[in-house]
Length: 468
Image 1 (cartoon, rainbow, N blue to C red):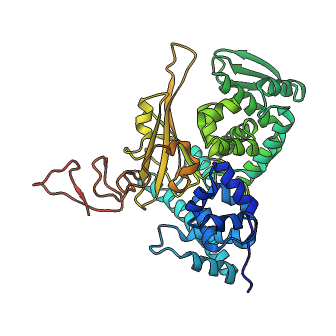
Image 2 (image 1 turned 90 degrees about the horizontal axis):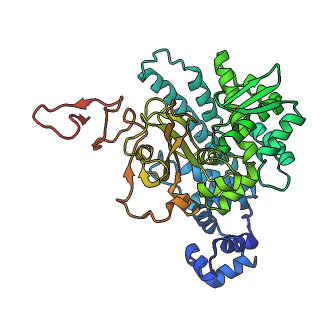
């Protein structure tokens, strides 16, 4: 079989220019000579499998756009699946290359099998945690069912995302995101909705028969705009949303109604932060949330959540995990496009920076963390306070966290200044005490559910038992 020959001179030059690197600096990163790099950039020589491996490893976000060749995409998917901590010995670049080129059907089946393995593990975790949370029947409450639907959908709904992006194009004009004024005009003129801003009406109240919408004027401007966007997509994209709800197979009317609300919120975010514009801007700003929210006129949380949804095939964003934690440590929103999976019941690991962030609003905290499987993550967390608009109502306090695996640190501005190379720099965290296998954690609240404990009356450590 003929070896594939990949010439990517213009892509390499664009990558190097985008990073502001000289040829000598780029050559050092690739482990080649300057003359060799020059030949590559002028398409005098093709990329080798080793160089493809280095580029996909060190520049994953940039390199994924160059993977036009079917075998190259297969190689990338195979490399990702084979790097699972489940396998103690990783396959070499040469082995991966031979499998991708000489056994394409086997490679595709391996990738599909690994994907099914991960999905099955996630479903088993749902059942296991339901049983351990005294839900013996394994049934889920409506909000749990909807949360798990979004998780299994990868937190990306292609049909709805594209419909919202198309609608945004009609509303944006020359701006990068639809303005509140343009959304208001569309509601009034295209959908015949009357609109008023008033206090004490809830965040949003819509009278469907009268076609009357009331928005709480005490909300911050970005929250008011989001509520407008929610109502617009709930009406303009009604058929798309309803079709998705119908196909979801949820068991109760409450679950279906909650899913409708969740999908309308998803579409509202996609309307205000259209996929392609948002993804390109996020990359150029190295995923700086404060700058992104200024560009698109959204809240800090809205920008974080949108980053976690950029999973469109062929144009993926950085794979993030995202969650929101309240003052009691409960995770009220969660999604992960990384190998990190949150516990579905209870709170998060107490060693995770997000808990400190709740107590320190409006300050960004960063952390390098390592999970029990040895994977390292860069986390950013910020405490937020949502005003209630009245002294009689307490403001809502919570924190949001966003993070990625260490291999993407180059594209995540919050990794700047962290020591990513020291073996002792990472904080050891787990998903939750109930499923964390670490036996030497001083912050453990209770033992893992699948391990017995050993109690020694004559010995007392910080934790009054040892994990067997």
